[in-house]
Length: 126
View 1 (cartoon, rainbow, N blue to C red):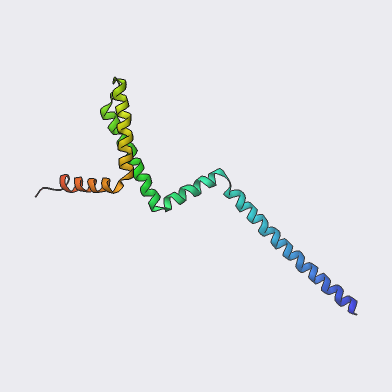
View 2 (view 1 turned 30 degrees about the vertical axis):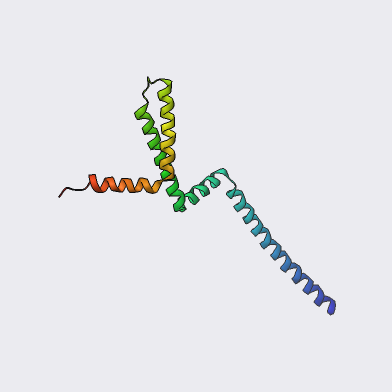
């Protein structure tokens, strides 16, 4: 009688272990699929863009850098024409680099200046 009891216990234990093995196999497949999806280039780019958009410091930094690049480009175009000599073109490049760096590194000053301009020039006259 004891042998049938041990046999049934052994069969129950084997069935439990098989169920546990199936569950672990399914979880491992899910983990592998998630890892595979996260390593796709599109997913990496999407995650990077999401992190950038979630960071207010990075958004401010990107805005100030873009504003600096645009201001530098405009300042170069004001100084240099298509028919300018080499010295004037070199001066334009140096000016563009300087304006870009100043504006990109001092966004607070640019905001204060733009606020001053909007307050004094675009306000309704009394």
